[in-house]
Image (cartoon, rainbow, N blue to C red; front, side, top):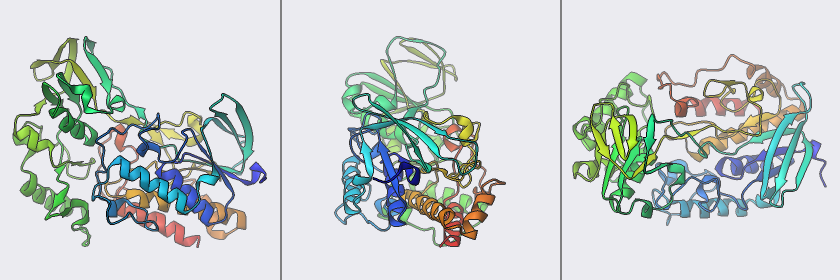
Length: 436
């Protein structure tokens, strides 16, 4: 058996964890994977207790813009695959590259701590299996890939609600809405998808919003919207102006449907990719309400002075970054997210990295795979004493590069680790090429 002090510990077997496993494997780096669930897939495995997908969940990006380049999805797979198709895809990816044999499944990581304060310290990891047996061992390094969409961000509402008050993480099937008066809080991608689900079961459906949104249809000119254009690079101000104008040709002005005018420019927050929500609002199936002021029994009072009666309030208010096994100081948290070099590397330690803590419109899983490729080459470069690895070690101590691409992203929890796709991928690839 391989001595654990010669192995990298990899936490998670979702999309980012599988990318990490593949790249470590490909570069011959010994590693041990840990997955709390009994199989791969992470978020996209609806049988996983930590999964927050629901029965109707599909990708909001198209398959060709999302898939791993070295393992394309089959032609028969839908443009926007369901969670069922995606679980099959990740399972096939794991089988094709024989990744399962590298994981301990049904094994939860309880604690990750450095053995010393030295940059090249070993890492002491405590795990627990399904029988409650705990094991502690020291590893050469750690790659964290436990996902970003599992820990609900539940707001505190003023007052008391007499009906059901849930977060969308608890939503699995539209039966939840049968014959109920439903209020969905938040009009992000999940909120809009679930509102469309609710239309077919609920007595009534309203959606409460604090800000305006940009709505992107899933198809433009008969093709997935994210596959159209993008070949000509424009300065941010011009791209924002052109794309927001073109968008109105396809969707109209959301203000007409009761949404506030966005107080920000396009691409400064993640757009809503949904072809049906404005359709149902336009047909009177979904009402748009203002932000919530307070709850009182079954009555919800809104900040514009109006009120409504509801049986169910469902908070589509997103998720928090959650690395419960790691002390915040180890990842140098600043505000709402860790301050990691390239959203990957902990500045203080040689072999502590996070995969998947990145959001960008159109980044796809290939963008996460490129993160994993950089991590694997960097770890290998450290082992081989490469000058490029030493240079990256120095660079990650700061200051960080600007990954915004010139966009002024909203200061929201879910935007705390948002980057510009093109700038980010180019920066990661450049660092990876230097380690070739």
